[in-house]
Length: 124
Image 1: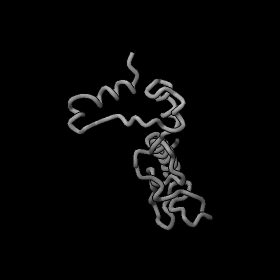
Image 2: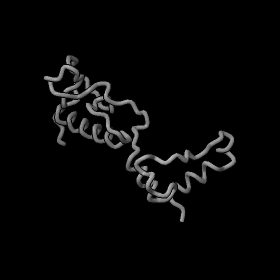
Image 3: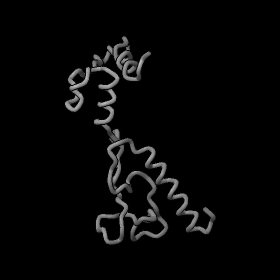
């Protein structure tokens, strides 16, 4: 049975990928070097130590309380000093997660929808 890691490595060795000189970095990740390189246990260890937001920009319009001079939006996602404008994306995250931002952005959108409904008198 192939694991996802096996499939990714096999894909990297296809003729199409070899046109780009694709190769597996075989230097073990330091926290995982006690495990057999390439084993399921090794890849599990790697997955637990390497996370990334994949360079999705976030945190550029920080949300925070009125006492935070760096906060661009309030906890209701309203832009400070601008009437009727909300920011509803990854830019409002005051702390950028070390993982992909997709699920968090969905939650921000859902929360914004609820806030907008309350503002306009709709039931949530």
